[in-house]
Image (cartoon, rainbow, N blue to C red; front, side, top):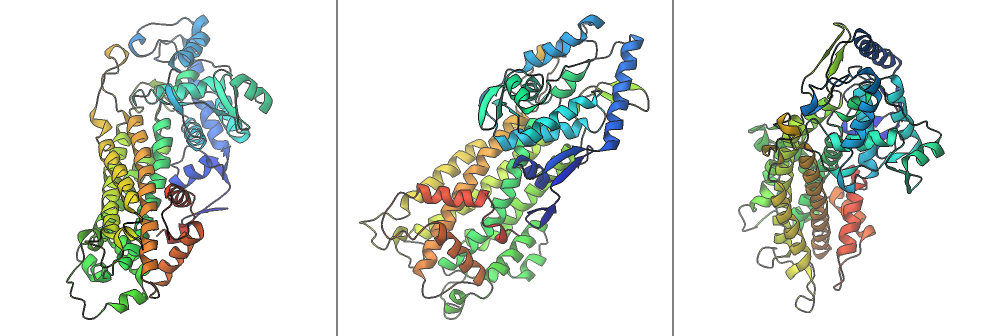
Length: 513
């Protein structure tokens, strides 16, 4: 069993086209879960394939089975050229550019594609799914460039690079080196796939690239958002703030789900603080700044936005997103538009905006920690020898830079449209662009969170011998085990990277709530 933030996952995941949790997508992406194909899905896949075979035997003209694609949909393809049709489709569409998707993103994309085919709407043979699962099990991972998809008819270029590897062409990563895909498959003992009618299209239509990249980014975004409560609690204590604003009665009076969850988390994190007791009486301040007082409202709103985005992505993981779709009951093959990435594109754009707001409030708290006009008597820039030393001055500048970049990236991709395929595909989603932007914003958020954790730990060190609550003190100890105090100036880049990596890898998972 594998545990993710309270969710226990079996090490073997049986695919039947069911909706998948982000935890499962993450687990497969990281190689923690193995995959198998459910026996009843094998029967559904075969039944849909039988429909395709009957269509061919009857000589019916059906898009994607015996016609061209996109603008060329009106061109009827003779039976003798159907194999070449599918092969040429894969080769011609594999024209993405840019850096390759990460191994985790590639594995997640392969998982999602296999799960879509397991639904039995695609008209492919069972061998197609078996090949995908064999490649995943052996660790043959196609090189999939991250750019080149407009999100309709789905992620054509990324999925074509996946299909290209399945037929033994292109490049794949195997045992930590890049090989020709044919060589990688042969070494792994996997036979290259020979595409039959409709199978190239069954592999190319869909939203699995944006689903993998954006889904994994959302998983990381949720973790960052929950850990922002911890960082904020540490900052509140460093600045001698009050937890009164987190009183349950306040949040029951405005019962947004995320707000109530964040307020409860902050209350638990701060319970039993000696620092709080030290300034409980005779404090001339009436209330804290918004970046401290409004953490439940802001962090909570981000939680809610990410939960809504999660719901969209998890529905998509168990949805038939290719075209045309095979319906066994009516012995029909129907052309539609389930490949359109609008649901994911909108969700990712929304999540990007929400997460940028989280970065924004985090940056404001960092400023309060280092700014001698605002930090309640802490040394300027958290340096014991300010002037001679700059302390956390430029760490805050770095946070401001990352925030500014995130603000630029929040421009929604989903409002853009560039017609393609000779005007046949005249409204596209730009869902992959939305996913890639979200991924970068999440990385920025992880780094800004790391800066706040470091700065807040430094602030707490200056409050000694007073101690904060047990959870906050435990977090400070964990940070100190990774990064020593800044007693004299040093490059903080390794510190920031070390804490950000710890966030990504679940080191602070016990504080996720």
